[in-house]
Image 1 (cartoon, rainbow, N blue to C red):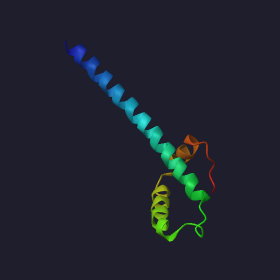
Image 2 (tube, rainbow, N blue to C red):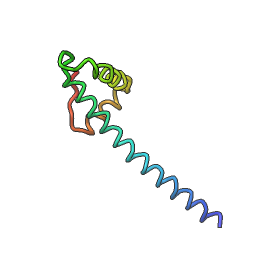
Image 3 (cartoon, one colour):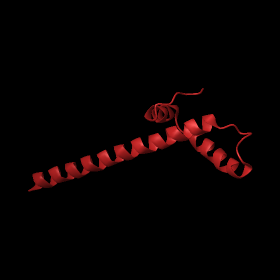
Image 4 (cartoon, helix red, strand yellow):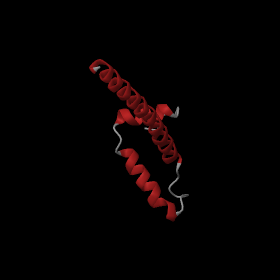
Amino acid sequence: MPHAIKDQEIAMLRAELELLMRERQSLLQVAGAATGFIAELDSFDVPQTAMEAAELLAECVNTLPEETLQDALNAVKAHSVV
C-alpha cells in the first residue's frame, strides 16, 4: 500500500509541475508582449493619464533577470531592443 501512495504523490507532483510550467509560459508571453509594447511607446504620444501605468509596467519589466526577460521575448518571438 505505501508504494501506491508514493505513486499517487508522484503523479500529483507531476501534474502540479506541468501546471506551473504552463503558467510560466503564459506569464513569459505576457512579459514579452509588455516588453514589446514598452519598446514601441513614444513617451511624447502617451496620454499623461496612461503614463503612470506605462512607467509601472516598465519598472516591473526592468526587475526581471536578463535570462527571464530573454525567455519572455522568445515566448512572443520578439527581439531585444538593447
